[in-house]
Image 1 (cartoon, rainbow over the protein chains, first blue to last red):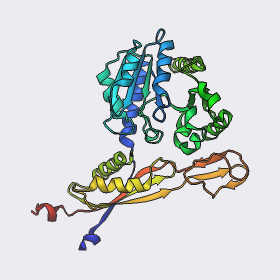
Image 2: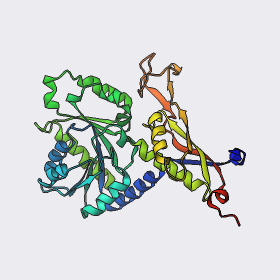
Image 3: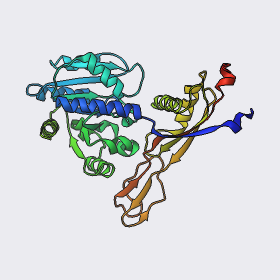
Image 4: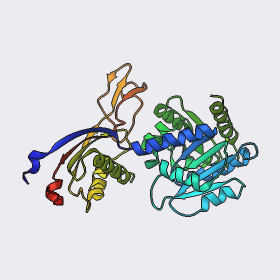
Length: 226
Length: 123
């Protein structure tokens, strides 16, 4: 074709994910106006996000109005587990998509009609890669790592451990049975996220759950006191 | 496979950047090493995103942007550990400073205004 000579160039310089970033900013304003602390939980499938959330809302549910958005490819199972504890939960079904984005969260929130909340937990789709890029308007991201997954995971999936302000090691009651070097993981995460918070928990024994819940309460107070 | 969603966003932004009816020849994007986007997957997703649509055949040019790693003691660290976001200097073990690599931007669009020819809207 001879039209090559007619080609024009337009400089664009726009962020590819600007639409999500703008929607996330709107959500963040909405959460700020409501005084709601929003926590985005990210991990591999099976790391124990829902189990930690069950232990969390058992402790915090009496004093704080908690709500949970559950992201999964299919089924209401996770939302059912939270609702069974008397805490409102809404399931976002992505139908195959590997992460939540701000649009899905906004739609999920509108469908859920939680009313006023002190803390909103967003359990992302089990995936250590794709959720990394999508701001959901949260106050902070939490990366969960179960001890059964191996202590090299922070270096194998560095992006999420770099972007998560908090890393929570889960299933710590299994430590005696596994070759998992907890000190090495703490050090590795520290090199990916200097100054981040590192917690070790077992939802089964309850170890570390108080520290985790204390962090949530402290962050909520800090958000409300400016 | 979040690359498909990103490819569709790039196509949307490119479409907004050119006059109505223009045919996009190529779109240049910057993809940083730390953007958590795999260039080969993005290229494959782009093919699928434009296939069968009005911009079928539009090319995606990926400008790969490495992160610059600097050690306070050793200076610039050119060596890379594949697939890793090292934060420790491979020479001395001290924390590395990281600059750039987070880019995920639509840079420019090359297009042809041939609406009259293709749409038959010649006055």
